[in-house]
Image (cartoon, rainbow, N blue to C red; front, side, top):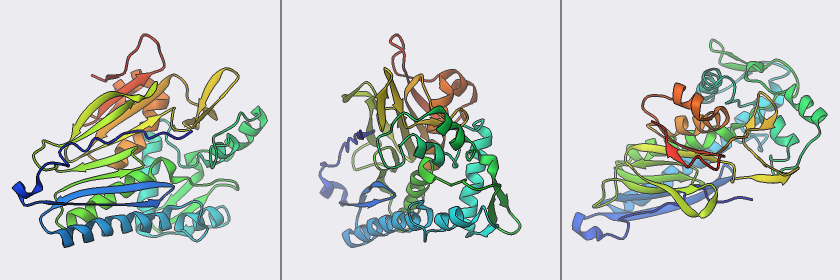
Length: 323
């Protein structure tokens, strides 16, 4: 079951643009397995529409590089060949893989771009999931672990330590794309825009007319019709991971797609985590580790410039911002 994670409240979008000599342009693209959308304000409609189109083209370009469904993509080529030999990759992809390795080390292995085999055995890769046998989980765990990805900065090559390892960009690709799209908009002179990747990772550039920022609602993980919090964003990102995005019920439990790569099982104890940070790649990459490791670990280790909204799976623990 798939629900919209962050209903966007475009406050001020119906304000009179003539007062500020501003016009509005918007667009969307279905890529990276989700819908990317852009809403932007500017003075020149033609230039603004071209900037929005260029930002959406950037998302499509990155899908061609990062897709693990396309064998012809750069990531697909790595997945096919890296167990046999070192694979030279473009600097952009190598830098992203280096960042993934750093996130993995800092999060005690709870962020792991090699989690794909577990997602497959649990049925979350292209479906809603099912309960696998313990032997299947153990077999998948044998192919999971960020330490199995060897990066050589001198040759810009990637090598796997064994067969069956597979890179899955699902936990970071959208955030990286949103930041890249924002860079394209800035290069085009856009100063006010909201970029959303499936509504689960967004970046707010500047503010819409006559507003202090972009108002965004964080949904209540217990009830999709309710809002747990509303935030005003300006030049910052927000990403959410929630157990309601994709899940199934078996043996009296809710099993979500948020996998703990250390144990091979979906993480328990948290309903959702939302992170506000300066970069979308950071907010998306850290959302799942915070979800997996829980409130106390997050409170001790979160970055100083992050704001974190936690919803625990406890009847006596309402959703709240970490202090």
